[in-house]
Length: 141
Image (tube, rainbow, N blue to C red; front, side, top):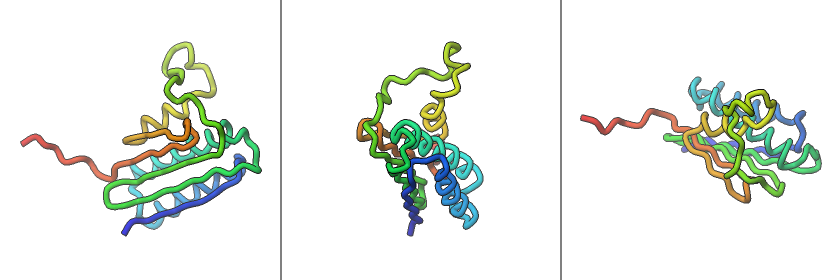
């Protein structure tokens, strides 16, 4: 059987620790490896921050939903807000020299690089990230 954690937080930076605590508890209970723990906590925090800052415009009356499922093969993280979404197909490249100095714009880049797959729904108001638990078996003989 898998492990499932689902929490709802107010769209406030002050609530972010609840997402971190949920992931830390999974790590402490042995459900996440050290490698997965690092990737999952950073990517989840970025996704939650995006939902708080952009999706919910830091309005604490708005809710952000965080959902994490661990099964034998992967960890699936879903973060959803009730905002209008954003154009996730047309994001500035944070590695472009023009954007290096900018303080924002790296969240999606980080999430994409840390997760094994990322999918946006509801115009970007919902993001699903998957993290594989083990290396895929090589098909080379």
